[in-house]
Image 1 (cartoon, protein in one colour):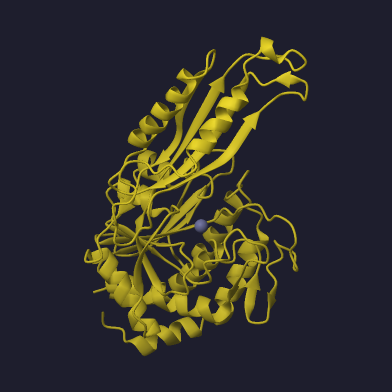
Image 2: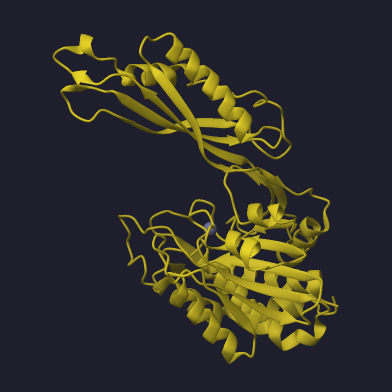
Amino acid sequence: MSIDRATLVNAAEQRRELVTTLLSELIQLDTVNPPGNEKIACDYVGEFCTARGIPYKTYDPGANRTSLIAEIGTGDSPRLFIPAHTDVVPVGEGWSVPPLGGVVKDGYVWGRGATDDKGPLAGLLAAADYLKTVESEFKGTLMIGAIADEEHGSDLGLDWLLKECGVRADMAFVPDIPSHLEEVEIAEKGLVNIRVTFHGKQAHSSTPWDGISALSALAEMVYLTEAWKPHGSDIKHPLLTPTTCVVTKAEAGIAHNIVPGKASAVYNLRYLPHQTGTGITAELRRMAEHIASRRKGITVEVENIAELAPSEVKADQPVAQALYRAIHEITGKEPKFVGIGGATLCKQLIWAGIPAVAFGPGDHNMPHMTDERIAIDELVKYTAVVIGATLRAVGK
Ligand SMILES: [Zn+2]
């Protein structure tokens, strides 16, 4: 990289106002998912790119769920993809500012998406504003992503782009882990949702002997699995916490005077790379069938209703090292390699064969919360990291 640190930091600092305006305006575009309507964010990003001569392509699966990818550089490899998502979660109650107002005060930009993930998108665009002016320094290509449908599983977003639209890259940095730029996330647990449904026999509650309560069976199941640890849950992983299991939903009963003929619950597990969703489901099924077998007239179904496999890259892989060094260079602090129990776009990328790691500005408590906000100082620092990381990864 032939551009020195002071130049990078300066380039970001000169874009303080730009990044603030970009974020404030992005927050004002209502892309709450559902329904998403991410097209309005892509129109905005498209105009930004056009004004700077940055070519881009939009991808539209229908229903205004558009994604956009812009490119700076030679068009050749190596190709670095930085995808930020444009959709946000619902605003919820109790805000002290208008949640889609994009309010700027006390050194922060406030509003839904400030950290997750419109702040990172704004910084990425501010970085692009500079990087376009030093395009002759590129040997490869930066792909700037404004991606739809992250908060609802990516079926119409990155998953679709990778599987149906031929989007390819050599590596990716996912700016969606708010950690004050102090962490590089390289491992994500797997997730499986399992629905357990007991069937009994409905009856009038005044003659309960005519019925068989499915709810009683479910209650026993929930009680007996409270401390359940699927096989292999305690094998230590260097970055990930042990497997977790929580019953997150339960449903039973249709009236206060009917013996419940059906009762179901959803188990949400976050599991380790050496486990599988199928294995965990089979284990839970055995327990459920055992309970059903001891209760006359009770049957049970156990279904794996959603699954995201674990994903991981090693700390010494080039993609992890490039981001680590870029953060260190700008912040002067050595970031920590971490693993998480949640899921980012890294998963879809890694499954598609694209090594990916995650990072981000802002506080980890902010996403999905009331009064979500991000410090402008941090946005500027993040902008510098994006510039440095890009030049390090795809610069001459
Ligand atoms: Zn996010």
